[in-house]
Image (cartoon, rainbow, N blue to C red; front, side):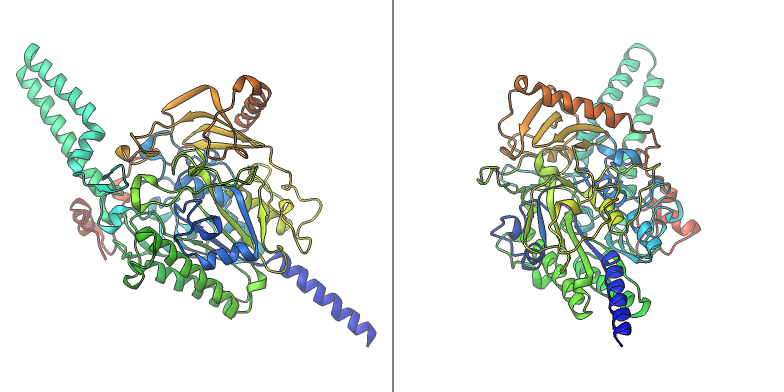
Length: 583
């Protein structure tokens, strides 16, 4: 009997070890959530008890950084553990910093391995609910189901003001109020210089050469002007037809119905967990990529007007409700202790949306004081654009109520899971993240001593577009480029979002981020030449590892690739021309 008891104990130990290596993975990634939008990060006007409970029961990061300051590259970096520049998912052209149409041919390259694909190989059932924004391509070749996800329910591009019958191109007043602007005014502001030059050429031709040629030039110019308007309104995110909802690889709504989308996404997530746990009998990898809180804002009617923080607060509180429902489902399935939960945001708040945007938040300085609000916004490498909430919870493994001050990144989740699964990264695809486990207080050892990705980070490169615009090394951060803001704002609603390369700094602006997280007081660079030299050397070494790859973003939408549900042949062509795809 004693021998049988020992065998039983060994089996139990083996089962426990197996579960600790392959827990369920639940990722909450929010869209455009600010560092200061949650109670556990100091917000006193928005209630977020369920998300706050994750921080209380796990580890809260105070210096978690996005892989990029805007959606597409940040999500690509998160899913691959590699800087987006390596994926071809960056651009310095403001028009192409993200996928701007479901008709673009590019997408996340297939020679990259997502963490979902690795999870499949380890034995997980994988699912994505919510926002993808990493391309569709021809015949859906870049959809999540082609990149390691067994199931997908959500939007392949993104939610924008158009999806809520609002205008992307409205301006924002000094108090955050929305200022109406017509599309014609926006189009003239966007392309006016080119058309004025065209008119100048036509007038010169009329006066000095040939009136007939001048009229031909004017006709061509008018055709281009109005043709460009039609193309932009029909095949970019200014078209409501771009607001798509997919089930796996099938369009089920065009345009998407927003009001109850969080409820439907929540139900889909819970159904996926239930099916995987009860029917498939394997661990799940669920990437819950919320459509919220990117504008257009939306909530169920019964959730509108509840928050002290207005419509934006309503959206965050509905988000928190959803997180609570999913966490309760873990309890109902009795798998709470067998599930690793990660919560974060893809980038900072979209301040170009005024009162509909989040809050940059304040950070605690090295002296324990609260800083001024973080500088910048989404799309910028000032702190507000890239410092995001970051929470890890895993009961029985990650000790509760921790605060982690180490510089960390969304790039780090991929190598952390590789360490957990005792896997090596592909030598031909070097990872840019480092494992999060060494920073955490753990109840049990989770990784082997030979883990290849547990080295401490020395330098973090902050890309805006295709350019390293800031570098973080230790407590110091250098800005080599900064945006030029609209007057009285820290954002650029006049051009939708701030361009990356407005003002170059040589020598760079240098800040002690631990003492001055609001980046208000640049240091005297002459006293920190050693620091700057170290950063320059690190940048050179990093750039030497970059291999040129095809750019996936800098491609115009191709009308014949634009999805149009339940239509083929001439019916499809007519619907595309008249911008009337719907189901």
